[in-house]
Length: 69
Image 1 (cartoon, rainbow, N blue to C red):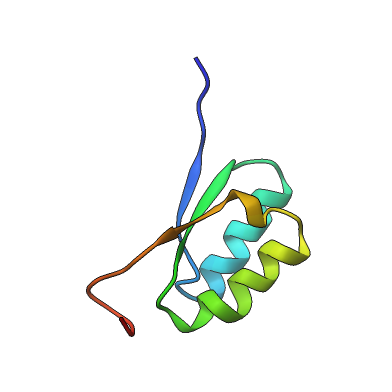
Image 2: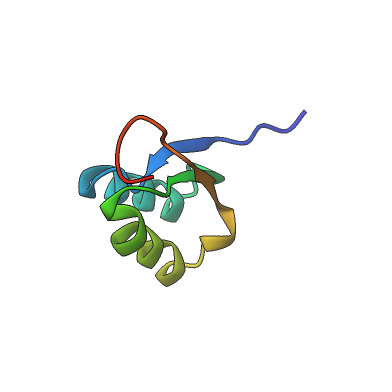
């Protein structure tokens, strides 16, 4: 049996983005869900994923109760 570890709420804020980026770089997680309607998702989170080569392991997570629709 294979297990995949997903980090939730990538893009929520700077601190979470750095923690998830660090976890990817250390091989602690396999993928992450990006909250697409938060300010830090389009700026910092997306840039970190592209810069460090794990963008293909980031999936979308739409937050329906906060942020812009």
